[in-house]
Length: 345
Image (cartoon, rainbow, N blue to C red; front, top):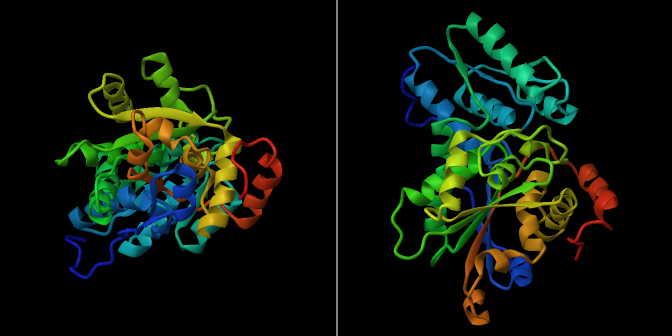
């Protein structure tokens, strides 16, 4: 295939960053929304996976065939990027994948295969059975690859151009760690005239592999995923994510791991639909929950006077996610409305 044509359409876009009056009022400071839910695939995954696939296509002497084992947003990002690059793709889903995501993949015209009850079984089948038969096969991991982190790091580059003034904090959700790896890389690779942004890495209870490692003081796996935020459902974060967390614990970088409840993450996604008129997965609701609970000052405003806090600029990385419908949000409101500390306005 060789180098891409100059007018080739890239599989990711520069996304808006907008001030949220509603969330700023709750937080008492300036809260910005980095809207990566507007990426072509509906999630931030388009940045990293799009970068990896674009580089692979440009470097190949023939048309690559991309393979991804994910029934979630990584698979959808792979399929979307393959369509943009005019390349074939095969997505292998475990039987546990929701029909909603399978149908979205089929609608994009990629090959979809079902194998195994868990992601690990689908991935093994893809690697050991499918790819060895295809000399043009290119493996697309969900999160654990340098080029994926490179793509996600573009978030920081854009934020510096979009926000007039210092960026005091960035909040993002963590699954396997590709997003937080990219954000930390973006922060640490650039020069700053003042203090670097603090990063708050958020998981839901039951999908908290990073926080479990922080609590244990070593890189560990969790026994299973019990959270409804299945997009955050990595039993073990990448080694690079744990290295960032270790540096955070040592005070070398400013990164902190916290958890929120499923109820608060779910109700935050419902509240966000009302406030921003945008639909995001409950995994993205984990980031929003920190703001809707009124906890931003606790994490980013220590030692600030009231007047100082009002001028702070905090970014919520709205990572998006395609596995959401109005029906799902209505179900969250019914199931978690009384339990959650986050309430509808």
